[in-house]
Image 1 (cartoon, rainbow, N blue to C red):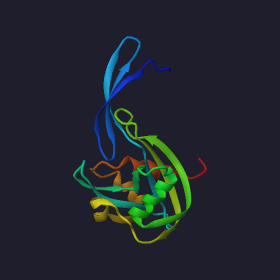
Image 2 (image 1 turned 30 degrees about the vertical axis):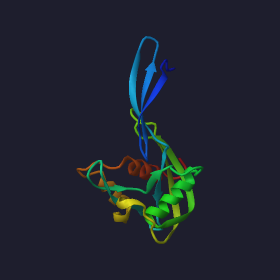
Image 3 (image 1 turned 90 degrees about the vertical axis):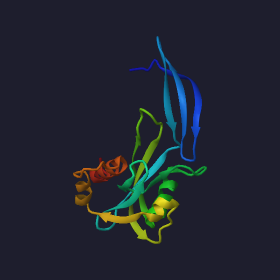
Length: 180
């Protein structure tokens, strides 16, 4: 299927430290319409796996849900000329205090293509060396690190609260192994 739509104009609605919002005028063969789009530089996430095959997770407060969530280390590509891998390495050190000697990119996905252009790149990190955390911001400073077995991660999906999609996709990809 080929698209007959194209963005004909954009208007900036909001600029913030993390994202922008644009109103886009889209035209097609016999129609035109507007869509508000969150414009994002992209992000990375890390599935850190220790020598016991446990997954490193962060318990962190998130204002959009007004509660503490289970997440894997993640962050925005917000530094000039920083590669996704370098950003993933930085986020793992900041949030969990870990360095890894083995890295594997396990996937890229569109976060929510109906309203944002954000793309998330997920890495697997192994052969970890633990050190001091370097949290940034009040949520990270109050966050806690936990190491969960695959069974404990699976139980998160049985609860009543929604689960972070990056955690779900990252753990699924790692469980499939490198020979997929």
